[in-house]
Length: 284
Image (cartoon, rainbow, N blue to C red; front, side):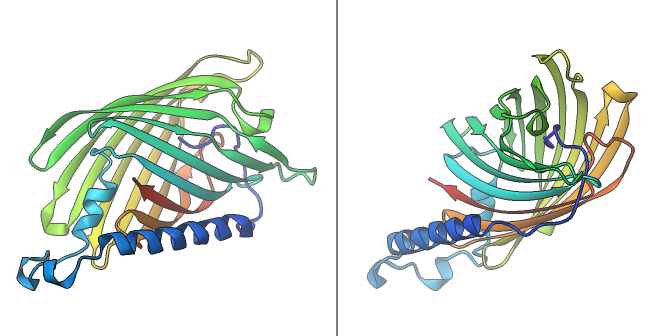
């Protein structure tokens, strides 16, 4: 869900060196540890004809959102809303009870610049929890359903929406073998049920389609188009597109870059002008 507390944009700022340093140290550590773990003695190596022709098939198993795994993500995102902007660092943890049931928790650290020349607000944002269950799985398709609960934990009014929001969702995965891709249609409806009475209620629907494509050398691309409908504002809407390119550096650790842009719409609460995100994913 787009951070509903910040609805404007400003100047693009460079990402913090601290995040880049942490990311590089984490990757280096995983490369050293996991490379030694996955190497086999020459006597046990598989014959060439028995190995997969396309190593990128490992990527599918790793990032399949319908096959849950224990994982940790860390992402850094700059969001330009047009007259204000925000910079968000979000750690995310996911615990898989089984490969069909998982709990996710993420707590963003936000810096919000209203674009008025005043000092930027910074602190923690709204805590998000997400329970997801894979209800259906067949040959080449699956369906996941669940709900997000976004809690009003923001340390400043500009860093959250002041509401507790329940947002059930469902999405499907449909394999397209000829294109080495997977198609994901997604629907979510979020509504606030409690929180600060002085803040505007939250009531939105998000329709999203995504296409994951596998490339050689453990590289993948991910294109996502989202439409947001704000029912509190006479069904005003906004749309955006994001394109992610990522690569797994080891069998368990990958990095990615994810730029995005607004396409159309009239809703300043849920719309964006541009975004830029970089991050890493590690699977346990």
